[in-house]
View (cartoon, rainbow, N blue to C red):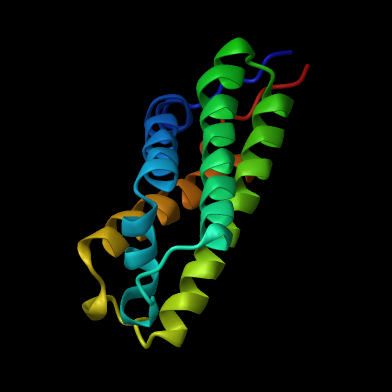
Length: 149
């Protein structure tokens, strides 16, 4: 029995999330100084080192993995179990990113949205949006109940 996946989840996971993830990966790979400046502001010494690069490459790789899971794997199958496993895995990345952002912003005294830069707003809104979509999907929100005979 195949479960009909609601259109909103298909739109978010197949069409919105992969380009956003690839955009984030591109920035992690090719605009590393800008990425550090966005997250660390004044506390960043301005000198990127190998440890920064390693973490940015790892984050970029995770985002490429997200794009492949959503943009390729989910087009390959309509198996709801596979979709849920993929979203649970990506949710772990989203929650880690949000926790890290909260910690860094807190240490910088930037928890108030009035202190955020444009890049902060974009990153937080995208991440919270897809996190809410993943949690809703995993909770079967919007799925039609199938009648049993």
